[in-house]
Length: 385
Ligand SMILES: Cc1cc2nc3c(=O)[nH]c(=O)nc-3n(C[C@H](O)[C@H](O)[C@H](O)COP(=O)(O)O)c2cc1C
Image (cartoon, helix red, strand yellow):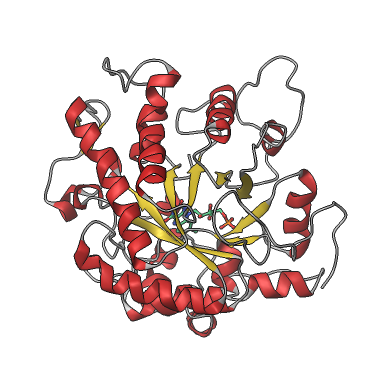
């Protein structure tokens, strides 16, 4: 074990307002892996991919974005948490993950205008009519029903034995589409920031009311991008941290070292994007960041910047035991890319996931020799803005 410059160490346990503490400050990022069965039930490959990360020392393991309503499915092979038919697989997964000592959560997702109508067989639905995609605005009653589907999915996750859920409010999917101020709706779910946050707050409130006192409720937000300015991202963050509904908040930065891309308020300084959020009152909520953390030093840098935990995506694809290695060795850095399919297979990444990575991340998987079937698919990973 080693110590970083700040007062918090990677190996420190993290106690949140509800439930059992995490063993350390490293969380597996939600990673779409397209390994589920066509009906959204868990496959062995998806089970093994996640359980290996639990064994690999992560304090928390979150599933990929899992659809809460079949109408919100965005990828072939996406995990479902929309029906009791999904329960047996989820129950098996929760049991295996908990046996590794990690805390575990399901990421709750609805694609909205970015769902895949070819998969769902339904018209796309969004907060507003969207000529670009053909999505049709949800009525007020349909928004209420959508909120309920998130709550029911959380109850299902608790029943399956997960420690908690993470609401996917990032990357411009349905919850994030409501937050986007560039579009209009005129009922209580549109217009002011308070109104645009209402679906999110109703989801969080509904989950908190419908689940037990030990259930950990997390949220993922895009603090800048997808139409959200730093000023609005900051206001949204301030509100959710103060809501009394959350255990942790993960800010999806895509690059923890980046500067804001857009204008910031006068007097906000020249800081990095992360600096615009770490000073907000947390009210006991754990604050995390994700984006290009590729070494023990990167993760320690985030903690020294003042966050409570660090979320790791690609690094955890390359090393199932990124967490254990980073805690044990201050010089640990991920292997060079691209890597072969064999390396990924040895890290418990299944063939469907490898194909998906090869399609979306040209520097990750070594280009297959001519003749090998090419990958296909659309990528959550492509949703950087
Ligand atoms: C293959 C892949 C799949 C992803 N799937 C999801 C997802 O299901 N939900 C989500 O919130 N973010 C998703 N992301 C974003 C990651 O969680 C993470 O925030 C991002 O990759 C940046 O962290 P990293 O640089 O450590 O990978 C995905 C990223 C990748 C590379």
